[in-house]
Image (cartoon, rainbow, N blue to C red; front, top):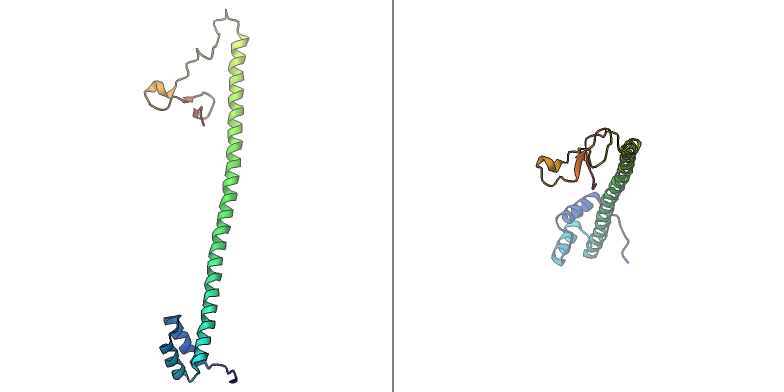
Length: 156
């Protein structure tokens, strides 16, 4: 068996340049490189094989890093969205409590006044302007409630 010797910098540079042009090595090119470099064609073939393996590993590492970064940013976005959902649920809960307080206030006024009282307030008598009354189509379920912040959609 021939003693394994280290390739010179010039030999490695020429092999690298050749590899950069084409990763595969057909027989004619292998023989030409071997004679240019003063190497055995088998050495050239083995060098190319090893270089392809290193190149493939490097590509896999790069792909892994890219996927890992995408995964991490997706996890961060998921956490941000979950936090936003919690805040929105809290806001919804507060709005529902406010609606309940207003309903109780209206019912309280209705009950506390006797039917003979001229101040009787019935939920049906209260003139709550529905947007539909203003000729805006498709907004029958949205109305303005005094004391609340703006318009309310009943079917949120």
